Image (cartoon, rainbow, N blue to C red; front, top):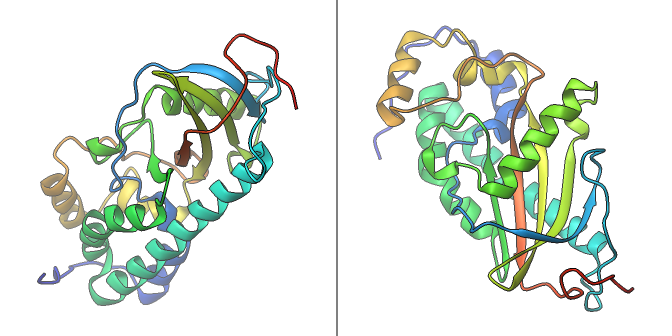
Length: 239
C-alpha cells in the first residue's frame, strides 16, 4: 500500500498526543453484525435505568464477574494493538494515513481479539463505517449511557453487562464507553482540516462521526460471548 502524503499543520507533539490519546476513538473500522431482537435473561449493570433482575447459574469459571474481567481484558488487548498500528501510521503519514490504517487494520485486529465464542468490536450512535452500526442491544445501552451523562455521571465511568437471549442462545454482553479526547477532534471534531475532510469523505461518504467536542460520548467497546449457561427464561435464578 502506498502511504498517503499529508499536508497538515500538526506538529510532532500534536501527532504524539493524537496517537496516545485517541486510539480507541477510531470506531469506524471493526465490523459488527446486527443481532436479532434479544430477550434479557439476566442483567448486571451500573446503570440506574438497568438494574439486576435475577441471579445467573453458570458453569465454574464463567461467573458474571469473571466474564466481565475477560471482556475488559480483550477490549484492552484490542486497544493496545490498535495503538501500535496508529502510532506507526501517524509517524509515517499523519492523520490521513492513520485513517487508512484504521480502515485496513482494525478489522484484522478485531478478529485476532475475537477467539472461540468471544467477539470484540466497537460501535457508536454516530458512525463513520456503516459496518460498525450498533445492534439493538448496543443502541439501547448507548442510549442509557446518554441518560446517565445527563444526570451528571462521568463518561469514563460508563459500562454495563448482561446476559441476553436470541433464538434460544444465551449471550453475555459487555459495553464500555469511549470518551472523546481533545486530539480526536482532528478527525471527529467540528473543524476538520479540508484535505483530511476530503479523504474521510472519499473513504466514508455517509460519515456521521464529526462535530464532537472533547469530553463527549464518542462510542463504545463492545464484547460478547455466546453459549453461556443460565436459568430458564422467566424463572427465578439460582446461584
